[in-house]
Image (cartoon, rainbow, N blue to C red):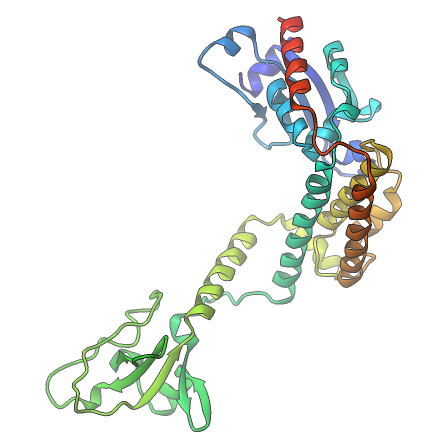
Length: 354
């Protein structure tokens, strides 16, 4: 069963809903229309070799979960699944009577603290990362190993490149040897010190090198300098540079330009959904209900429009998280859903449907 086949055999669809901003009551002019739903595989496919957990269209804005996968994720209190099950009536395009066997309140548990609030925390970390990327953009030219090397100079140190320029030396003509008992510290020599026809390898093998290299050095010559390679700093930089470039390539240009337009240096749409998830987490603990249609639309859209400063939002998040933890500690929700009950419902739905 694939996406095209499912829509050619709509009798296997159990639930078909408009999701996303339309269901949240957070849509704006020009907002996309997303869809989510539930289906059941044909009986032959269930008994055969093939298996199918979910299907989606190419843009991934229409996603359908097979009933078994849906119930598995429901027992884990997955936010997307709980939202789908609690889709507002006006956004439900089709609902099979067998869906009445799945009652939302039977599956809510204290796991929602980790799934809703925990997912919100993940979004916050992304927002912080974006804030850093915007305010501290990476140079287009990637730094090399040499940019993380320093030479002891007078009562301190200077960058290796500065020392080489000052002494009119080229790194290709230099040689390094380890300095015993000092991590990533080397003695530095130059070609001009050699009296025979020998040669040094250079400090690095080339612009793409990821470490310094050592040379054979005669015992009778004195080092010109002592050099340290900040290898840990270089490794951290390489990781951040890679992440930054991947973000640059994959980012939504429209959302990025929107972020720059409101001037707050964070993804406002991302932060809006962070607060939506936090508010929903609190409501689950208080009312034992997943409220998809947001009555706090005005507040959430203010966040999306960039009304608040980033630090203000972070303070609000911390306060909300502390409150939510208290609510879950006091709540009489079960620790986790009844998995056996979910399994029995799955069996009953399959038997009735087939």
